[in-house]
Image (cartoon, rainbow, N blue to C red; front, side, top):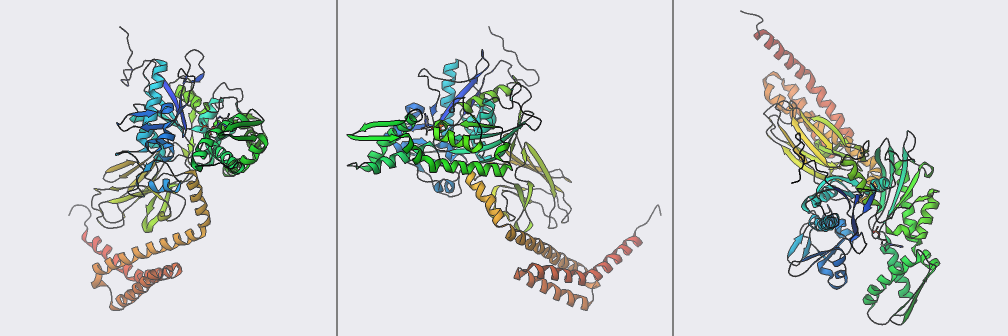
Length: 622
Ligand code: AMP
């Protein structure tokens, strides 16, 4: 009988359990491991020799599910029951998806702000359910090839994925029966696959580390990320891209070209569908040849390399613009980039290679299979987590600021944008009403000064605060972002020790364009935001003064003269009027006036109270 050692401290099995690396892609997914003999990462291949599992799921009427290659033909024959690009839906609301364009399958739209669900027959599937089906298929294939159970994985996500999308990916893993040890960024994985940042890599740079541009052009998405790797720490300096741009657009451009070159008879949609497949074939052919020719239903289709380049040049240009933005965001010049890494099937196109090479003025790292490079990197990360490689840490940054709503709807930032993660920040707050027993904690993401212009991620109430005068409770709120980029918000009243926390699974997903738009908005509205913040702060102060003055007068009515009361009442009215007019300078002036009027009698009454209490107190034994 085999003996399995158990770690007494943790109770965990110490058998050499395999940890796989998974690239959960929009169009294709794949799984890789470190080969036990060569110690090199390899993509797992079924008998057909293909490592890619198309991210496609087909549901038939009796509830049978097909995933991958077997599901792909149904994209044409049974589109309504065949789901593709589920990754695009991860962590998204219906509203987010509606803006992204048409999908052949049905999306549930009962509430714009709810997380999206897909309807197939009478069943509803969340993007997490769908991704878990793909992960299950990958797990099954891996177990079949490796002949051992696979329970642990590292899964990659785009660098621009927000908390909700990372959490959704993690949940999908769990649902597929996988313990997701780490979620890592795709560009980080690609850099690892090229050996950047790993110990023993001869290219390891100076003390400032290496700066790497990762250009990732797949079938339907594009992104460029700038990373810095120093002392084994990977930091995403910036990321840009377009989630609706990729090699599929090259195919569309070719189809459009052929449609105008030929006068096809009959159903245009049918022709387009058929031509799409030939267009992809032509594109791939032209990656290694000068001319493509094929007969289609008696028509002669042809495309030269030069004509193809002309067709795709506008699309390629867009990716170069994104590279410029990414450099600018990282505060770098082209000359600062040490290495350029190419990822994604569409980087095989010669024009793309040439344009990226020309733009950065560098030779490209394109020797690793562009479809496998991310999964191979994930396998390397898995190996690091298994303890086989030491001295490596992965570090990312938050793309947007995270903060809380404070009085008057203002955004109070706890973690500024571009904070390195994992990270932690905390700040103390207090109550503004006497005896206030609950405090609303509303967490927002964004750069604007008013929370209404930012995105709400979570809200909860810290309840059970013991009755105390306003301003006395000390509520410490801390934000912790763990290594996966998931935010945990904790609120603790320090005097009583009551405590509550939430793990933020935001309702809203954000694409990189949205992040970009939010940043742009914050710059465009900077002046307006500053004015609103100043007005809100002045109004909050004025409202608090009005409320305390009123309370003070009620309590000390008999000690205030008639003249003082009249003057105070006038000043309060004037301040109220200024508040209604939303005029910051007037609010500040009237606040000062009320303060000046009430200060003399307030001080007098306080002095009297102190005198009285002194008289009443006895020092020492009587
Ligand atoms: P990915 O999303 O990374 O799997 O990339 C898939 C995209 O790469 C699809 O648009 C493919 O048509 C494209 N692709 C695959 N092989 C080639 C090739 N040899 N030349 C040009 N494009 C290719």
